Structure formats: C-alpha cells, structure tokens
View 1 (cartoon, helix red, strand yellow):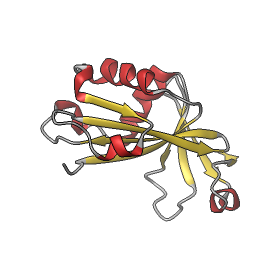
View 2 (cartoon, rainbow, N blue to C red; view 1 turned 30 degrees about the horizontal axis):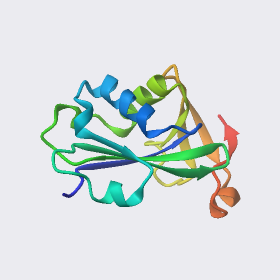
View 3 (tube, rainbow, N blue to C red; view 1 turned 90 degrees about the vertical axis):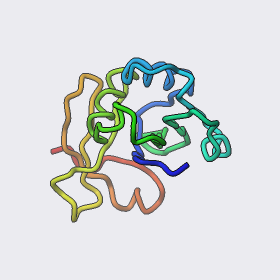
View 4 (tube, one colour; view 1 turned 180 degrees about the vertical axis):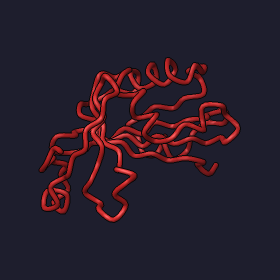
Length: 143
C-alpha cells in the first residue's frame, strides 16, 4: 500500500503508541482498529489490511527527543485532507507537547520552522545548522 500523505513531526517529549492512538482517535473520530501506532519499523512497514493511518514513533535528539512519521494509506478518508500544520496543531493540543513544521514561507531555508505549542499557537524558530548536521534538533533563534 502506498502512502497518500506522509508528515514527519519532531515532538518535544516522548509519546507512547497507546497515547498516540488515543490522540488520533480523538482528532479524526475514527475507530482505533484503523490506526497502527508503533515504535517497530517492521510493523510500520507492513500494516495489516484495513489500516488507514500509521504513526511510526522513533527517537529524535536534542530539544525534540521523539520523531513521528504520520502516514495515511487511504486517500478516500475524510480526515486525509488536512495539511501537516493542521495535524501538528491538533496533535500538540491532544498530546500536550510542542512540534516543529517547516515554515511554508521560507522554502529556501531548510532551518526555518514553525514551533507549534500545545495551545495551538505558533512561533517562528531557526534550527542550529551545526547541530542538525550532527543529528540533533536544537533551536538557535526564536523570532
């Protein structure tokens, strides 16, 4: 099954698969049976028939110790049309954490992001390029 949307969201705190499932159920108002939330890359790569969304959680670093790949497997689902920022805002509220999404208005700067707070507010940040080169996510500047 090919994904129709894939969002990678750095999260400011560790989230377990059960917590992610509950958040996605609350946001998308879907049966938990259609959600696969896992830390196992093999399970994430081979979801069972009927799975509509996969949440793959894996270690991040620095100020964002968890990464989430949110993958939709069905374009026919009503909740599939929301964009990365809308999903990040909803997840931050449900999970009470911060997340980063790329700044749409700075496509030429790979280090500019929007930091989304649990209350849905956003602030522009710039990541430390040297830290990114070393595999860490550290905020260098808050605008």
